[in-house]
Image (cartoon, rainbow, N blue to C red):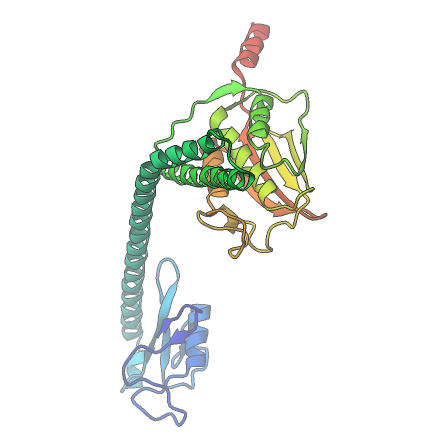
Length: 355
């Protein structure tokens, strides 16, 4: 008898189906079998647990965990009382358990290999598509922007159409960039250019880049004056901040408040982007960081669900962590950390003072 996905035993031997009247080749009491499996102890005939049963239930205990139960009914039950015979039966049960565990982990290894290969092929396909689409999209963006400069000037309706084309071309270009960046990060092609630098400069660049997305929101930046220098890749951390700010602008209504703050917490720099919008769907606080996952799968807001996945990959490459949660007063809050370390100048001053 082997356990199913819910941990309940099921019969696997042909002709061993349980019968209410006890008839049949082997009348198995599934309740006793389940007890032996859950407790990891033998039960039934010749044991201290329900010895009145004609069947001996031996748990198949493998090195990791129990893999099932072996039910034995002897034609000559006297043999099961002989220690040598019982020891031999226990040895058989142990060998069966080890074999079942090996089969299980072979399946696990094969599934993991298939998932890894599928992920590799998907990343390769995304990278190829993104790379091939980048050039025509760049041309499309340029052509759309040039329409507004055409002579004679466009009529009002035509200008509105041209502006819509430009916006959609920029959005599509951003989506393709996200796909390409995700593929590069996961393939290990991105090299971190780590430098000791103030966070304020990167925050300023991210705020400027997110200005159009946050033009109808109230943005507040709270950065202490005494923030230390931190070693990070400015372009990549700016990308993290831009994604978080644009998400706040995209998924909250106009007029919402967005706050970007930072503080030192132990040996880490903690950066937070919070809003007072609808917040994250309950139970999906972690799922939103998966690739192609969105807070609300049925959302009408455009996107493919890569922004937060890219943020997590970048922050993890810096040795930090990122998480999201719902605020008590309403809204969503995303926090990521970066290790502080010891700036070279500080280390030099300490060495001089000690000398």
